[in-house]
Length: 340
Image 1 (tube, helix red, strand yellow):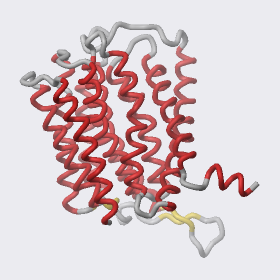
Image 2 (cartoon, one colour):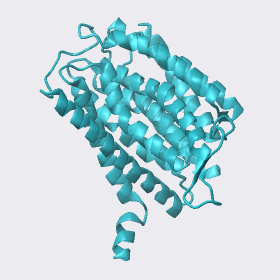
Image 3 (tube, one colour):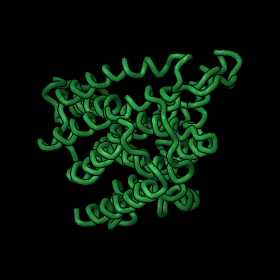
Image 4 (tube, rainbow, N blue to C red):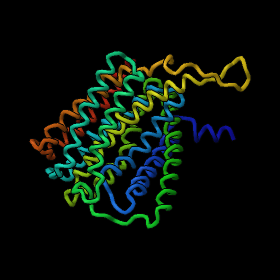
């Protein structure tokens, strides 16, 4: 029996990673449907796709792998603005986005710059978390306009779940499936890194897990591209990035303090000891994540700026460039991981 278990869950770690990816994909698509209800909006789409990403990052932090949590946050953000956006632009180039949506796109730049500036200290503290949460609160005001049913940013309403109870039940199931999928995916990434020392767990997250986490956005966006509504996918990708940086990242920073404040007291059986929260260790900002992921994310945010102002439209050439940039980004991450 132990040999069978080792064959399924051991080895290279590909099996749990694939199982986790399937569960996360299903949870992401189902979450979007559950949140959409009788009408869709880019905000609800972003939140639905955000759930599995948040589950993976929180679980990584829960097992005290803060480096993996940060890698998940930044690699999925880079993948959303390069792989997803580039692929959608290739399918439906030059799609004109409503001005209401375009006003949200430049907000990625200040969030990415804030994390880049925080990285100079080499650690992320509760002060950085408060600043990012403050920016996230300001974003809620911008998102409230997008959530209006009469907004031009929203597609025509479509009935998906007739009863609110069914939507809520589906959403709860999606959260549970996201947790199971995240556990399997993190387990697979850690097993791969143990069996292949040259391939770190962070590189596995960037090269394998991040594309799988943003795949539901890509598949859902492809269905919107023929009617020239690819701007919905662009805004959804921007929304996921903003949720990653302004909600998930500060929550991970604060969770890191909490995880290290509560621990078992070895002197007393089954007794937890709580240390002062502010005195706990801050979350270390991995040098690779800061130098590679964060810098590439800032570059992609700069690309969005003239597009948001209506000064530049993304065509097929730009889409191919974004996909090529994502391939270069993975190679840079692999090279940096091999040297560390």
